[in-house]
Image 1 (cartoon, rainbow, N blue to C red):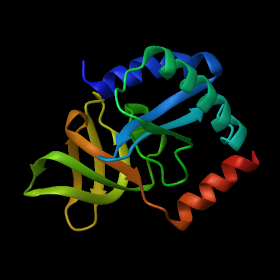
Image 2: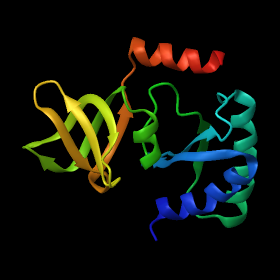
Image 3: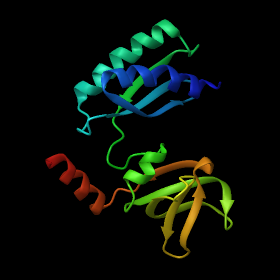
Length: 166
């Protein structure tokens, strides 16, 4: 199991018990490592600074005991934000209808980078569907998605603000 998977397996159950969902774990940097953890509240309420602080304390204690990273690092905990990364299959479904940027591991029609309206997953749940203005609808195998995130648009901001008001 690679370090990324080990960290996810270590951190996710702790967050789950606290009422959060792990969105992404990412270890960045060469000289100065930063362990970035993104989480959402399970109840759908927007993350607050106190939520991040609670997660930071819990995960920090867990990592001190387990010590999966041999080098010194900085722990950074945040919410995914409005233009959030799409990392789980359910993210592609939940955010269907909004504009997204995606990168695939393998070229599709000679391209690896795409930007368009997210349609969600196909019926089998194995391909991400995206409408691209110039090319129409494309399907990118979920397993081949290297990275994906929502694009910050007025529509996305309005929808996010509306969700917060409810």
